[in-house]
Image 1 (cartoon, rainbow, N blue to C red):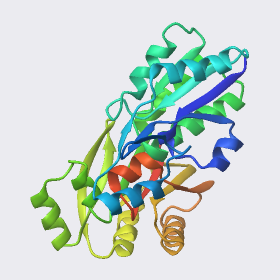
Image 2 (image 1 turned 60 degrees about the vertical axis):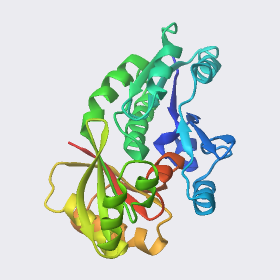
Image 3 (image 1 turned 180 degrees about the vertical axis):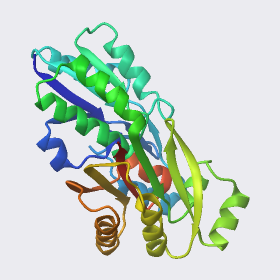
Length: 281
């Protein structure tokens, strides 16, 4: 039986990757002012930047509802497909819970909690898509991807904590202190949750390179299949410097993929955020 790979929109895979691996997307909702929009359909990171600049408020995001999932799953199962659907970590959103509820009465739909976000989830999604291309069953793909989730290493450095502050994830006192000291926090995904890590100091371009060095130097435990550079509104020069540093510190990646983060990461972290995301052996 053919297998269809589906993900929610938080995986931050580029249109080119979605097309290459025949991946369908169920978008999250983004409430911008009084307007409910769909992530990546009629809501973009640029819309979020514009709204925050104008109102000094953050938009909110919400999970696809059960009906959204039922419609998407049935679209494919009615054509004879098995489905494997991938979700942002269940600690970040009710998307996984809703997808599981939609799939409860469908024997040929499997749901994977990626325990991650952004291209950390994307790494799991792409692995599932490669297994589907190899002819593996939905059950086999889910089983292998459930194991893979604990091996994904996802982190970002954030240029400004203004968005974290607006979103209630950082106190006013901490925000003031960080901005005065020009601190750039490291955000890591650990056990399916976001946690604050090291605090860097300096210009964002310098901090980003120091962060990449910290993540890759002297490592021997990283799979060389692919690594993501995922960012929000970073300059092409900065991204190219990161690419060069990756090749210097850990040469031999089969793919170094650049993606722009979507509405979820943008609304949490704001512009000037960059992460390198990969899989451990």
